[in-house]
Image (tube, rainbow, N blue to C red):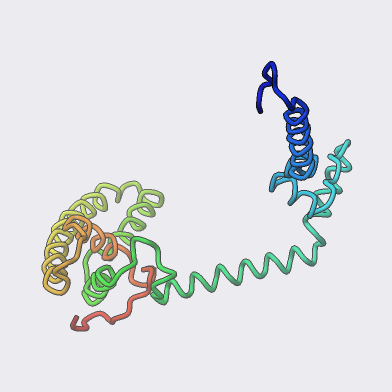
Length: 217
């Protein structure tokens, strides 16, 4: 914008320039003007697409009716419950069969599978722990006089079980290091995993044994 100076021969030219500039500015403002409203947020747009939100229930009866409507009919709920039960049973069956993607994190990997095979191929004294504990509980209930004898027998058996668990852990660690030299599992982790596996009754082990007792691994 130019300032008018005294003695300028053509003062109207600057005025026209200013007017023209002002007109151009107004035109630019009118052409660059937005929609006249802020851009809606994504949450608001999604809410409009879903439709109007139902008003909150005013009474407990309306709330119960709303919950019942959302749950669907009893037949639909039975079908959904049966489908969930079937899916759960299928996942459990696949886990027991030893499918890798359905195993628990503690059982995944070729190293853990190899440890299970070593334990399952052995006849372990540790497998008698749970039956002996049940015998001790029953003897305490039925005949308190036998409690001292059964307790002493249990202590002797537990000493032998601990010794067997230590020996089993050493065997497992040695064979795993030979088979998987790059395994990252610690010696304690492998020993404890084999101890817990061996202390379970064979029929109750999960995943199910892939080998028979006495097989060479």
